[in-house]
Length: 142
Image (cartoon, rainbow, N blue to C red):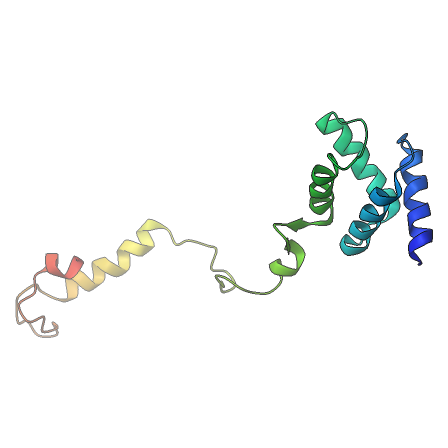
């Protein structure tokens, strides 16, 4: 699609939502944003209509273009210059094993610590106990 036909489509889309004709410099900026964010002329016009109603702005001009550009970036899924959809699928960050989202009950956790405490006698040399070099049960907790 050529730039001039894209400009015509954008201009007609804005006219369809009731916006007056856009200046050529502003139309060039919108065309560049449309190309970089991969938004269709209809998406641009709908985003303008939503933005103008939300922010109580009547005309798109050089002053209101910054806020409109931010609204378009949110529409396209771009946050702080980073594409969210690309970043979410990279696998970076904490990885979890399947089924790891299930937390064991507190009783299951206590059962493992209770059995280890009963097998070893603190400070004693009973048969089957582990040599702890004089550590008490309290020292073992910290």
